[in-house]
Structure formats: C-alpha cells, structure tokens
Image (cartoon, rainbow, N blue to C red; front, top):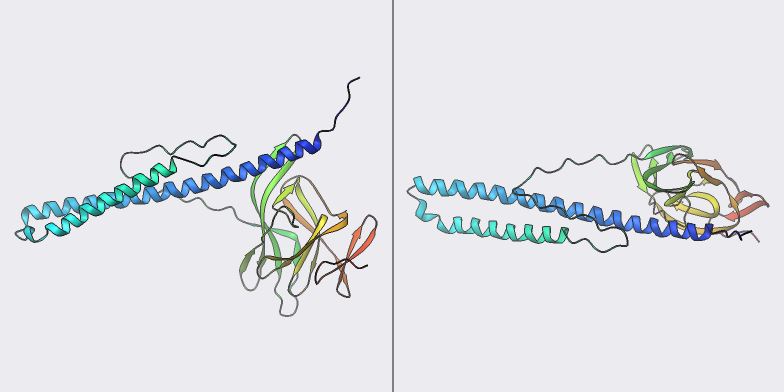
Length: 276
C-alpha cells in the first residue's frame, strides 16, 4: 500500500502565494486604467485645441486684423504639439505593464481620434454587521462594524475572501476605514467567509478576538492600538457568504474575560497583556 502524505500545508502556502500575485495584478490593472483615463482626457483636450486652431484660421481669412495674430496662433500650435507628445508618452507607458508571475495584461489598443470618457462605475457599498456594534452610551455614539467585499479565491473546498473593514459612526454621520492586515482581527483575508468574533467596547477603543489573535482598534482613526496572540483559539470562521458576527466579551476591572476551551483568559484592555 502506498504511503499517504498530507500536503495541506504546502497547498495553503501555494494559495497564499497565488493570493499575493492576484493582489499585485489587481494593483497593476488599476494603475493602467488610470493611465488610460489620463490619456483619454489629453486626447479630448487635443481635439478641443485643434478646433480652436481651425476657427482661428477661418477668422484670419476674413478678418482684416489677421496679421496681428500670428504669434497667438503659433502658440496654440505649439500647445497642440506638446499635448500630442504627452499623449504618446502616456500611451507608451500604458502598453508596458510591470512583470509579474501571472499572465501579462493585454496592452490598451490605440484608437484614432478622441473617444468619450468612460462611465465611472459605482463603488461596492459597505455592508453593516447586524451584531458587531457598540451601543451609544453617554457622549459616545453608536459604532457599527462594516465590511466591503474585495473578491475571493477558491482552492478545492477552501475559500478565501478579500475584504475591507471599517466603522460607521452614527450621529456624526462618518465612516472610518480600519488598517486591517493578515494578522489582525478582523483580517484582510477571511478564510471561509462567515467570520465569528468576540467583541468588546469601551470609550476610546473596540476590541475583536478570533482564532488565536486579538486586536484593539481606535474607532475614531481606524488604527491598531495593540495586536497580540492568544494561548487558545476563540470564535471561528466557516464557509459561507462573506459576513461578520460578534459575541460580546465581559470586562472586569480593566481586563477582558475571554472564554477559551481551557477556561477564561483575562487580557488587559490597556495593552493586551495577559494576567499572570
């Protein structure tokens, strides 16, 4: 009988490598799209200057003062030539994307004459979590966790969602983007899709815990205050639609009371240190 070898660790590493390559390709595609839009705007400006030049030429033929305008017309012609050089340079840059390990993106085909500016697409709206929220208390407003989908990748039955997180602050009508990463809670990559976290709220921060990590956030800026590990996993993440659910954590004398399989673990709200 042949030996069985568990390659799940190697497969997970391959998935992470492909995810990184996908992010690089998406960033490069966005940069090329912006370059293409700049080139289109310059082409439109070039067409407008050409029309003005033609109008000036017609006016020069019928106006007795045409001899007084040669310098002005020459300046317009020089502007047109400069705009043409800039458009050509931008087009050449857009046709040479940076090398990545993925397939090379196709170059933007040149077109004769100006073309209309493309219609801007509506950005994906952030979704408010139904349970990950801090209730208004005293002078503090209601703070609600939001998430914005950013694509997904599947490998067999395993699925990874890319997401952005933030806070909606009611009363002040503002949204704060969180500086999430792969090692924060919530993370920038959600394994499975359905994220179950523990949550606690105090006046200047909101704390989330999931897996073996716990992160404290400044809700007014979206910055990480502290981020540390746990001795045992809490919460979970399972396959499903991208969503976030939270269960509140108890706070006693400045310590979070984290329920783990091995018992309650006290974690300091101030700096994330565990009680010894």
